[in-house]
Length: 115
Length: 113
Image (tube, chains in turn orange, cyan):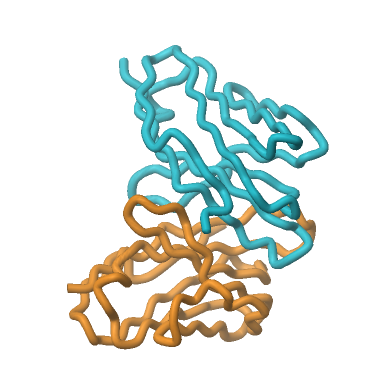
């Protein structure tokens, strides 16, 4: 079956513009995560979805960042008024909820460059 | 606050050698410690993981050693191969929460011929 897919794979935008990043999780996976990978940094947790609700948004760096998930499937991460420090690879992961040790499967990421 | 510290930042090993990457954590609530392997342009993929009730786990050429009292764990890659050249991330999570992963900063491994 298909893995986690993300689009676009690359996004170049100008400072101040809004961007939307999309994640299609593995079918049937109820848990969905967004992480950010900056150059020289590890992966930083942003937000967690269980179904369509987000019980943990603690990693969102500012109110310019928001995310939603619809139909328990596709998720969109929106960054408003982008800044140069938002440049990073944004990774999405999904997990089947059954079993606390279940693996998180990552997508290939969206590389965001803010000029 | 870096909850999981990883070293070294980069590592060069000859083919057939042993690659060792170390991690240390602070949060004693962590109860699951996976290692991820990431190739350029790809997302991280789970390599091997350990729970704190065991001190060692081996899968093929990959071994995790875990020291609960020292809050440290390490990845050993035996008989390293050029195909192992990638970035490796240690991670930790508290399975009692949302199971969000806390990652180390990564180690770029290069295995030379």
